[in-house]
Structure formats: structure tokens, C-alpha cells
Length: 180
Ligand code: SF4
Ligand code: SF4
Picture 1: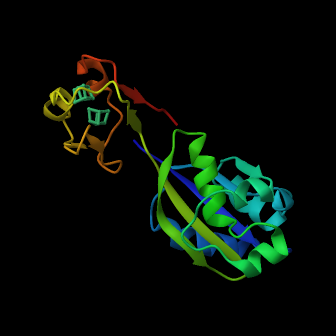
Picture 2: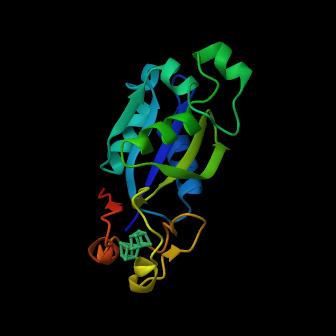
């Protein structure tokens, strides 16, 4: 199964109920959270930590400068003025996802009460330039999770069950499977 990383931005003193409500709204029933992520200066924020602990997950924290270097769809000059980065929730989720192999922003910045949440869906596998476009993985995948694309196939994360059959069949060892 693929998973998600949840990015969190918040004001000082945000209450856990507000964080929980925003996270639940952003996840919309998903429960495969690999990690939460935020900016360094919120690493000890009780409202965030309470929800992260309820999920039994880790909170990955990053310096504002590292977050500001991440390209996001909704940067804010006002946020940059306060925190030193134009994005916290989206940038933290994308940056943390890189540690799990990368991912796609599926829930852009969603505002709650003194909290913002963004969700990145992790990519379960990558296909390298060693791919010769032979098509064997497309025919093998039992979930039809691989689709033809220019150059090499692409994976549909929500369909992939990480069974590994495509890895086994690939004649050029072009596929790397990530595990959560
Ligand atoms: S064959 Fe590959 S793409 Fe298809 S479900 Fe298994 S791991 Fe995912
Ligand atoms: S089996 Fe390997 S070489 Fe063939 S299309 Fe899939 S990734 Fe490319």
C-alpha cells in the first residue's frame, strides 16, 4: 500500500482539537499516515504533538530556509515575513515525502482554526532511465497500477499494493519499490 505524509503549519498555542479536526478533514478517511511534518520552530507545539502521538507517527521538522526552497503551489509572502518560509504545511509535506521516495501533493493547503494542513501521497516506486519501455511490467501488474507514458511507464499510487511483481519481471532492474 502507498501512504501519505501530512504537513502541518500552526500558530503558537493551537489546540489539539483544532489540529485533529483539520487533519481529519484533509485525510478524508485515509489512515495510512507515514509521517507528519512541520517547521523546526513548532517541533514542541503541544497541540501538534498530541495529534501526531494519537496517530502513532513521527513529526519530521525542518528549518525555515529548507522549507522556503521547496516549490509549492500556494506560497505566501505574509507567512514568509512571520516564519521565514513562504510555506509550512505544503513544503514540509513535500520535503518529508522525499525521505520516503517522493510524492504528489493531493491535498493542497487546507485552513483550519489556527492550523493549516497539506497531504502528500507517497509514490510507491520509481522507474529509472534503465527502462527500455518493453511493456512487461504493464502486462504483469495485477492491479493495473502502471500506465503507458512517453519514455517509461508511470505508476498510479492509489492502485499499487507494493506486491513487487513488476520488480521481478523487469529485465533491466529499472524499478525500485519503496516501503513505508
Ligand atoms: S506490480 Fe508493481 S505497480 Fe503493480 S501493484 Fe505490484 S508493485 Fe505496484
Ligand atoms: S518491465 Fe522494466 S524495462 Fe520494461 S517497461 Fe517496465 S520498467 Fe521499463
